[in-house]
Image (cartoon, rainbow, N blue to C red; front, side, top):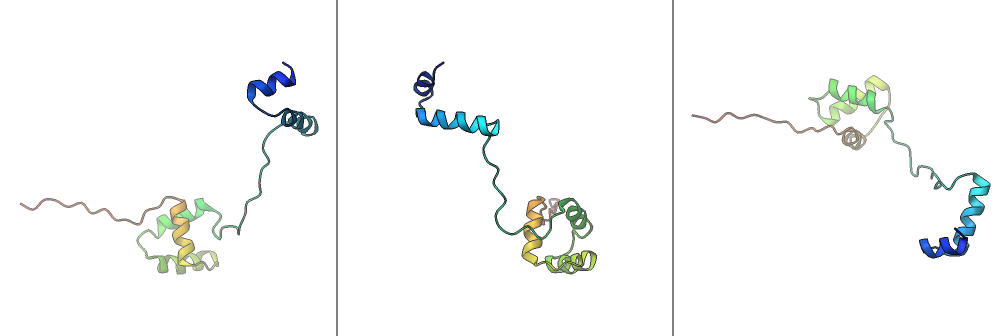
Length: 103
């Protein structure tokens, strides 16, 4: 298939095809660029260790968890950071109470 046929078939400008061919010759692939992560790094990076911590302290409030985290790791974090990280590991703080119907 010629370049003109390909540009008509795929509805792409001929210059775009030329650019893609040059890019493939230079890089060896046409994969999209991988962008660096933006913004600050998360305060709590090891989610598996944090999940184990949350399981050990599941009945505590965020303020109590905050002081326990600081004691265990030596790292001060805000209650908002703890809340955000709990959401990342899909940890719910809702308590389900089963009620039996009264007779």
